[in-house]
Every structure is written in structure tokens, then in C-alpha cells.
Length: 333
Image 1 (tube, rainbow, N blue to C red):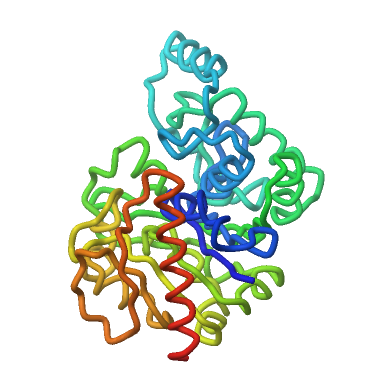
Image 2 (cartoon, helix red, strand yellow; image 1 turned 135 degrees about the vertical axis):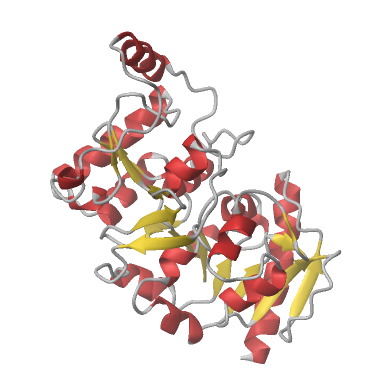
């Protein structure tokens, strides 16, 4: 049995061909929920949904998010009517007093549907509607995710990191903005001074997550700050990782990041934007998988391969390297 920590697109890409190496019916994926948002009253859980859609066979693998061949009639009509009503497009936070009112899971990340700044497809929206309705009926996010996974016939155990709210907030020189506004609406352009996981002191990993972390753990080539960081911020997670075998795949080749805002965000929180910085962020890791071209000395066991993942056969190759690294990690522990 093995557990993957997943955020962004790196770990889902690794999982896309991992069934040739790991028994997925004995595999658990714990997904980041720090970048969830409530948009127009619906809870959107991007990192849960990427795994849900991929394993359910409907993911748009060109973009690695949302549903393939989805229509956007509702989004387009909403944009058109918002503009006709005189509203500018772009993120619109609900008033501060509304950020801690109502549905607890949406704390600190409530956006109006006016000027909907995330492109939500029609089939994708149905998932968010079902998720939100189940939560409003009294189900936890863990229970709701299990129901959605059953609906999509997902072949592994998918868990949210917590049933309580944690919001990833990016501190810029002008103001604090939610990660989705920073990345989607602003394209990752604003300077970053710090990253905050708001609510981390009140949130806790679920019992199911802690049980999953007792198994060997794989951290895919995800952003260490905003994809994995919210999970590490939860009380008890680092302790659990220190007590099991952990392997991480670097999202860098030396000091060159594969994609996304990882470099800028790592520098903002005082980490070197490099494989060495990833190792510093993960002191509990027993072994690493690095790219063939990465000569970073880590002082811990490493397995090298081409870590580019474009096709399922690429993810199978990297998954085999992960399996080898797990064995090295067990021996080193």
C-alpha cells in the first residue's frame, strides 16, 4: 500500500500511468484543499477534482484540469449578463463579514459569481453543485468526496486533507489575495512577499488521512509551497511523515522549475528555488527522484530518470523510479 500527496498537476500526471507499477485499489491519494474557493455559492475543489476527473476518465489532459470537451454555456451567459449589468470582469470577494459566515468550509475564500473569474464548464459545474449540496445536507467533505469518487468509478481512495477550512492566501505588496486570484485571475504576475495558510491552527487532518500517512508516502512533482504546504501545515502531518518512508519527486531540474509559480513562491517563504530548496522543505524525506540532468547533492538516496511527464508511459517510467526510491528509503530509514 502507498499514499500519494497531491496538489496541482504534478502528482496527477504521475498517477496517470502509475497503475503499471502500483496497485491502485491499494493506493490512497490525499489532496490539497487550500486552494478551494466558493464561487457563486458553489465549493470548487480543484486539486480533488483533477484526480477525480483523471481517474474517472473525463479529465481534459491537454490542460490537466476540468472536464474534456465540456461546454461553457452557463459561464458564457453569466459573463455576458454581468457585463450587460455594468459589472467589470474579474474576482469579486464577498464582504469581509461574509467570509466567516454561512458554510464553514468556505471561510476566507468566498467570491461572487458576478464576473466569474474561473472558467467553469457545464459538466464541471454539476460536480461543484453536487458537492455543495451534499455538504449542505450535512455530509463532511471526506464523505462527499467518497460519494463523488463512487459516481466517477474512481479506482483509488481519494481523501481531502481535512474536513475543515484552510485558505491559501498570497501576500503581495498591495494586499492579500487568495491563491486562485493570484494564479488564475492575475496569471501569477504579482510580486509575492509571503504565503499564509489561513485557518491552519484550527484545522486538523482527518483520521482517514492520518491512517493513510502510516503507509509509505509519495510526494509527486508538485509545488512545495501551495500544493503540498497546506497539508504540511496541519497539526500532526509532519510527525506522521517523519515516522514512515517518504519519497519526493523534484519539480525542478537543479534550479529550473518545470512549470507553474513554484520558484516565486518558494523564494517568498525563504526557500531556495531549486531541488536543494525542495529537500529543505521536506526534511522528513528518506529518498528523492531527480531528473537525469539534476546533479544536486542531497545527502539522501536518489534515483534518477527523465522526470518529464507528457504521456502515460512517461508517468509509468517515473513511477518505477519512485518504486525504486521507496525501496532505498526503506533501507535508509
